[in-house]
Every structure is written in structure tokens, then in C-alpha cells.
Length: 426
Image 1 (tube, rainbow, N blue to C red):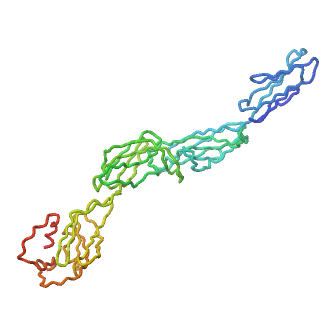
Image 2 (image 1 turned 90 degrees about the vertical axis):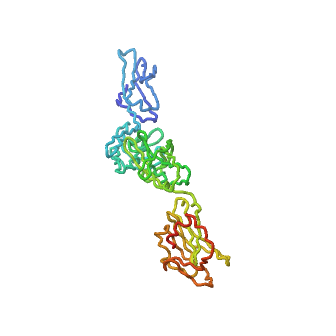
Image 3 (image 1 turned 60 degrees about the horizontal axis):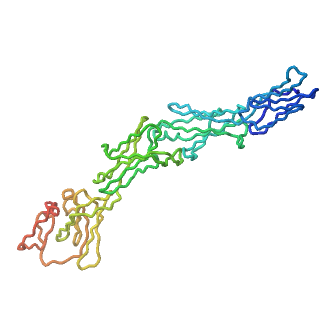
């Protein structure tokens, strides 16, 4: 039997042929090729050839070639060991600390000499986020953010690549290992949240917030102007969007809704939503604005004087926004309507003066701070001549009256809504 190498090398997936030969003798010998699970026997022959496709399971297995003869007390034999080279299997382990996360790329293959490629960071929904440079030993160091709202951006699927120079059965040189990473962080309000939400005056609405949470259960609360609100709350699991390292990705999240009834103007304001788990809390400020049109003014009053008229009204609900008013008027002998304004809304009863003839100075009108927070606009009417002289009753800088008929029957007094400013007009 020929003596040969004690090691027979092969590559996983590549055909390997084992040849066992013996020098001819008399009488003829019997050759036996013994593997782990079976044997090949040839009688009267001096050669055995055996071919197979090795796998990594065949590595370090032994093959024995034996020759038997009646002239031999003991068979001749030669044992060789298979050295089957194969591409690595890659696994990832983690080593977290308070301020960083270390990921370790652990390949195992034959030969056990490895080179490493760049790491990859992916979302749970297989969306690529970024490539990362690891160390030459195959580790990746991820520093944790000091910003409580960014800690979750380290979450996702991490992939490391390793090669030992052996192609796998599909022709790939680098093999990949993956690991899913979830950090223990407080609930995160995702980027898809709407900081401004719309409601309608006098109706119910839901304030909706979206949260990312991978640790423990969530406790939520809502407050308005630092006062807690106790309202109906609903929670459900969803898929939503967030920003991880400047990339928009899909994440599994939680949708929280708070039901409110908007019955006052003060309800259109800022609300604070707080979400907590065992790792801490985060907050989101949501502003509620109205999609309503302003309500029609009420208690409209028109008080005529010699050179001006006073128009007053009570503003209705402003629809959630600052509102202004316009007064349209038309002279009896004209077809064209004119407009005064704009007049800013006051909290109480709003008014405007429309002057006849030459516009008088605001200083000739009552002090706005003393008369229902009045607003003033000067509008010129066409002059109309009179046959009688004007008489001033009261202080000289107050309202001018003309053509007063002292014999006329008394007129019923104005209602309170119409006359609430009268004391300042006399």
C-alpha cells in the first residue's frame, strides 16, 4: 500500500475523490475503504476510488484503507483525516453598558482566520438605515445618545460580514450574521406625530399621539395648562413612521387617543401628553386649533347722532383665531355700499363710529378704555344742510345734538345691551 499524507483536504460543496491503492501480490488482496457510516470493498483489485461532495460535517472525519490477504496475519491499513474547509457561520453577541452598546461579530469556520466587512443597520421592516465601520477584530461600538428622545434610534437589525476566503455553496465570499437590538428606553413620541390638531367648537374630538415603546407597558396622562384632565383614553398597536439617523423608517408603535369635548374658547389651547414606562418619561405638546368659521355677531345696535352714528355688537365665537369686523353702509340716495374696517375684536361689546361730514378726532369721542373697549373708524357722509342752529348739551368735548324737539313724545329707553355705554356719551 502506498504511504501518503495523513491529511486529505477538501472544500465544502466541491467534489472530492479518495483513491486507495496496493501493490499487487499473490494471491490477490481484498481492499476495504472504511468511512464513518459505510465501507467500500473490492476483491482481487489493487485500487479503490471513491468520490463524494463533502460538507462541513465531514471535517475531521477519518477514512481507513485496508488490504487483506491470506498471507498476512494482520491487514495492512492506512488512516487519513479529512480537512474540509468551509465558509464561516456568523453570530452576533452584545455587551451593553450604561453609555454604549458593543456588538461582537463571532464567525466560526475552517480555516479560522477571518476578515470583516462593514456593519449594516436596518429597520425591523428591512429598510436600510446606514453602514457602520467596525474594528478589525469584528466588534462595533455604539455610543448612546444623551438625548432621551433619540435613544431608540440604536434599535433595529444589525448585520456583520465575515470571510475566511472560502466561498459558500451559493458563491458568496462574505457571510452575514444578524441580530435584533432593542434598548430599554422610555416611550418615544415618533416623528409622525402632529403637534397641531384640529377640532370643532361644541363637538367632541380625539387628540391622537403615536409612541414607540419596546420595553414594559405604557402609562399616559394629559393635562391642560398644568391641570390634569381625566378623560376617556384608548390604546392600540399600529405601524407608523419615525426618523432613525435621518432616515424615514417603519416602526411598530402604539396609538393613544384622548377624547375631549370643546365647549369653550379656552379649550383651543396647548395640551401636554406624558408617556412613561419603567425607564422614564417623555412629553409632547399638542396645540388644538379650530376649523370653525367665526359666529355671526349678536346684539347689533345702531345709535344715530348729528354727525356720527355708533354701531355696536357682541362678538360671537371666533372659530379659534383672532377675528376682525367690517361694517358696510349705504346712503339713501346712493346705490354703492361702503365698508369701514377692519375693527379688531374685543372681549366685551365692540363698537365703531361712522362720522358724518368732516371726520372728528378720536379725542372728541369717549375714552375707549371707559366705554366697553370701543373701537373707532371715521367714515365721511355727504353734508346735509339744516335750517336750525345746533345746540351743544353737556360738556363741549362730548356728543353734539341738533334739532332737538323738546315737545316731542318721549322715546322708550334703550335696552341694557344697547345702552350700556350711555353714561359716557352724555
